[in-house]
Image 1 (cartoon, helix red, strand yellow):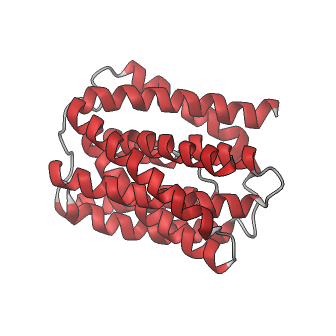
Image 2 (cartoon, helix red, strand yellow):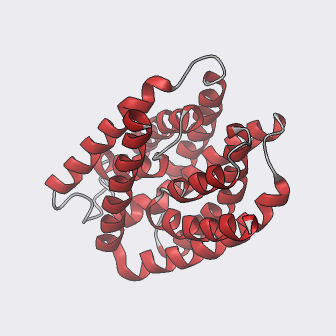
Length: 252
């Protein structure tokens, strides 16, 4: 029964994550609910080890249909990898508790801004080119990568929002680019969790298969329906993240 619950959760997580990020909103709570006595680090490591494959497949699918700006995104992915490693190290010496109460407020600001700016992310009009673009993208990668390693919830949504707001991408291109950086930050986390023995590989394999299936479906939907669809899912996912993180911070 445990396998069925977490595998179905991984399928849904792959679907949501492929469109706009936020798969951890589905899979991680399912793992915590199914294995309440297990060390959180083990569940987080298993979540990353199962989800990274769906994210990687989504990146590949997007790259066949969306013209990724590789010259900017590859340095940004490396910066994200380094940032995630640094964040994971920082959490061993600092408590992320202060972020717990700040996060829902930041997400609320992101949601409010997105709703207020009706045209935000509807048109793909990159603001930078060449060195300026890869420097800006790398700063985003390093900062959100650090956040992912240090705390984590909403990482994909933050990548998407910043690519739209700061780089001028539409939601579809931003989501495609975010997938590449998410792969890098997830790989960094998996390496760290593996070295610490915090990955259940026997669970990670079926989770990965289900996550890939969900990812393929989610990517197909995003490419078929375009930017407006991705924007709608983004708003829905951020709204759910606000409710989830707000509950964890103030009511739990």
